[in-house]
Image 1: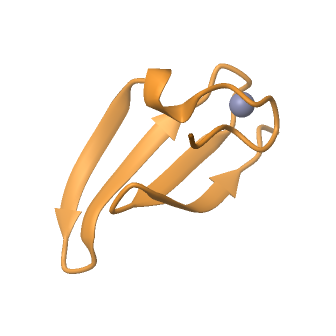
Image 2: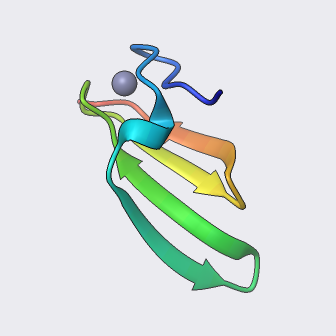
Length: 51
Ligand SMILES: [Zn+2]
């Protein structure tokens, strides 16, 4: 299961904002801890920590 690296919240429980790109489906999720989690084709590819 994919979880937030900052707070271990299950990523699947977060509201998703999906965009279809040439790379596949890019999924942005705002975690409860304030981080942005970016998944490409359901694989965690980037996390932007809260300020
Ligand atoms: Zn988090």
